[in-house]
Amino acid sequence: MSNIEQFLNGKLQERKDNLSIRNLSAYNLPVDFCSNDYLGFSRSVELKKLIDETVATVPLYLNGAGGSRLLSGNTQYTEETEQFIAGFHQAESGLIFNSGYDANVGLLSSVPQRGDTIITDELIHASIIDGCRLSHATRYKFLHNNLSDLEAKLQLAKGNVFVVVESVYSMDGDMAPLMEISNLCETYQANLIVDEAHATGIFGKKGEGLIKQLNLTEKVFARIVTFGKAMGTHGAIILGSKNLRHYLVNFARSFIYTTAAPIHNIIAIRSAYQLLHTIDHQLIHQKIGLFRKLIKEHNINALDSESTIQGILFSSNEDTKLAAGTLQNKGFDVRAILSPTVARGKERLRICLHTFNTDDEMISLVKHLKELN
Ligand SMILES: Cc1ncc(COP(=O)(O)O)c(C=O)c1O
Image 1: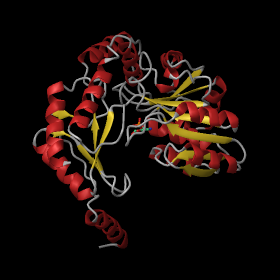
Image 2: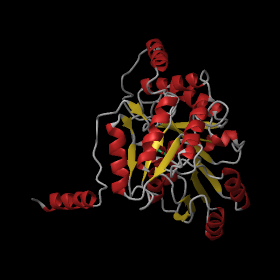
Image 3: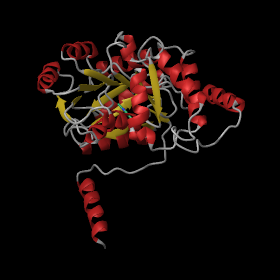
């Protein structure tokens, strides 16, 4: 075996040994407590119909964009969609990226410069960490949701300062104390960047996200809204000033050097926003409320979360995998989140709640969890 194959095998063996090996699986179980399709848009027949009807009206429809946005891949429809989405979230402007990963990498790698400072929550998403790694700015981490640690890091910061948080954390489901963080940013003249991936569609009167719900739209420098979760489609938008948009068009490499999303995808995104206006926005919160009540009643060891993401804690990769396997055998699609993705001793089942999960499914899941937790 060649040296490189031996290296690959060795690294994989390490993961097998500590029970953290990842494998792709193309098979989904009947009861979805795992996907980020919180509002059921991904499976929505109504959304599919809306998309199909709009696609049929597009003159000179292209299956692929044929180039990057700066070359042949831009359309008036895409730019109108960006303006429409920015308006919905009460932002001046927006620029669509091919994914939330691309958006975060593009923003963090291009805006903060050498001599600047990026301060991120310790639980920030990998796409933000990767963006910071591509930047020449200094990066500090602050303890999760810990305001005094954030302030200590703000006191050390130099140059243009950026504080990056998620409004709802993707693995813990808890929220950032956005009011207090925004006040600190104001005091220290730092620029606040908020990733709204798991708040979009869920919080705000019509799903505009937590920043709009808390009336902080004027206080943030940039927001990242992703479409692959509650919006049921794919892609992301960075919301901010017109100036920021123009800067990203010029400097964000993950925007510039990639083929634009096909028009079909842009139509899907815009249609999902149309659908968002028609749904009952209380339903998802009723589901979250019921699940919280059930796990409290059954005294289950869970993270405190008012979002669609509910973490049920176990104390090792082995226990978490065992629990996931047992529930999967009963038809529940639940996934184990193992260390090193989360801290050792905080391994968990990441239960995602959806509008389409029936009350009976939740009651049954919690009963089984009680036997395992
Ligand atoms: C907080 C957060 N930001 C960004 C992303 C990346 O978004 P996308 O899946 O669109 O690349 C995710 C997805 O896992 C996420 O959870």
